[in-house]
Image (cartoon, rainbow over all chains, first blue to last red; front, side):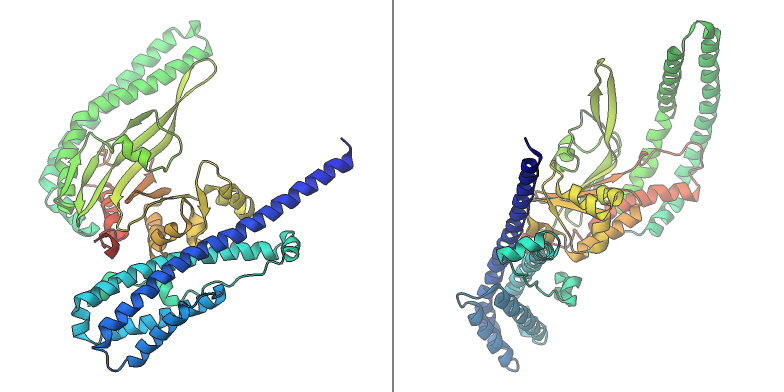
Length: 185
Length: 319
């Protein structure tokens, strides 16, 4: 075999490997986002129940409940982009957090079996979402890295790959809400 | 759970009469060991020297090996009574004092099935040994641990056998409080610390004997450990930021390499040690503070994982 041919084959193999790793990373991101999405939907499904069972008691927080209901219907719209879903998730997390804090002010509500059960389910889903979010962020970081690093960046720009957004993980979440402490009060 | 200082108090106060009695035994055993040791050494070397002229070097090496192995056997025989007394009278009450629901079986070890199920080590052992098996329930969490030594047999081209150690140290199994389906394995990060981030990272990502590499979002944790698993999300569901921090603290406390895995609702933990957990001290007094502390703190460390890692905090999914 002549030298030019060998060089050509080596270059071809390198190109194929680069291409494949880019595709694999992109699919990994999509894959994990699908799981994030499932968990988010689980949480959305809990919201109507929650609103229904707390609205009788909560007079001062009507606006919070309305807001969370509105956000939920927005999140249920079809054809949302990943970025929109990420933004909506951040808002819902915040509003749900405020509702949970508000629940603390109503002793009747705190003792309500139904609300307690919802709180548990929400906490469990919350943990799952946190994990999925972290997995997504890692996948996106890997993907974005290959998009910016030499030599894969040239190929990525030719393939039209764009950097993706990560979820912003709040400081409070990093500390990981302690469920039992919440109930011990 | 009782604190280390409470346990040390218990050791010195409640166990004091027993300790004094054992001290006498210890002195006697020590004297006997020294006498027999000198005698044994003189005999073996006497024989070796008398036939020295007729020996080539290889035979001499065999004699040295025989001498060491023989001594290990004699030593074990000499301290066996004293050792079992010590375990019955000191270690057993200490364990009961920590928690009444714990059973102590000095001569047994963790079942091999547990070791294999943990998937912490990729090679299957051909021979296992161990002792000081403790098992029971703390806060309704099942826990079991023991000294464990797993070895693999090798044969060279001449058919000679040799044994290499897969793992030696403390092996702990306990219930884990979260529900999960896959496997997550945490190993000491040897590749990255040996070869640096770039090559080490590549080696980790291409470890064929393990599942997918899972990169964690805690810099210190990543420095100390490497995580493999079947599910990227589940691994992070198990390894929350809090748990990662706790494992780091635990590692700092033990000062030994630790291996952790989460499989089928259990947490497996292997802590590498070179010596036995509860072997009685022969050449130092049992009343010596340092000696007492090693017994108390090893026990505390093993049983403490339930509290340390908050395994007793039932999560709602498992209620």
